Length: 303
Image (cartoon, rainbow, N blue to C red; front, top):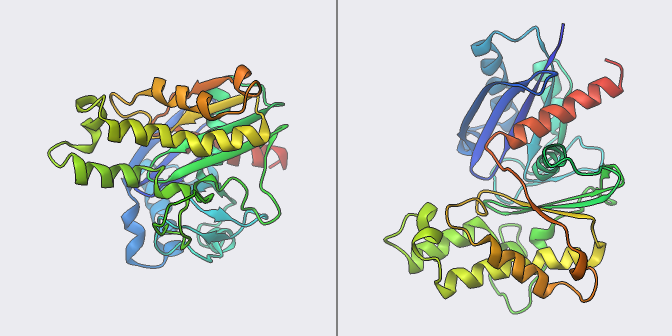
């Protein structure tokens, strides 16, 4: 009998959960607000959400593991959440051991963007032996680095924090505490600020459709290319994956972003040979990626 793994995708805005079987079919996808974690102990709330979810679909005996993706700095051993700028209560958290004790099954933790890229690698049928960079513009600016078959974590598990590279002449303080991080300008949160200031009569979801040539929005899109081109110039990747809620807003000028990436990337190479892909981003992508990661971990351990 096939088993299920639960995938959880926690973003700065939404909490998504679903169970996935061996055929890659999702069962009972649900979306809630990430604000549910503001009111108490994160582990207690998470365990309660998982238990209630399994009860609703009567799958307690079929679920063998849980994968959790979160917009955080995660320790190198993938056990602890170090810091989470866009969510309350997720800093310095002994996550995996405590949650496993509560729900009595294996828990696999990683940065949400790693699980998003894992899903995109599968959907886009990319060569897993290559260097693949994923850039995800949502509430913040997410980045995943995949090299020769695995995600690059760095010495402390902090690799890929592209949203927190410093930009010149930016004096705004980032939610991480530093001054001038790229995420201050390159994020959905900053787009929300621009909409409130310059387009108060336009819903944020319609801003690109209703103001397609506005120089403020064109500059915003062009600025997104700065951190992207920076990492491209460092790693000279085989594939570049672009996604995230901002990039899939109606009317978003993908051509402007691609042009800006080319303009800012070193010539002649890697600029002359960029392979840029826009992934088929859905609300379920992170759930698929985290559930698949948990399944692969179980299978590799022979469980």
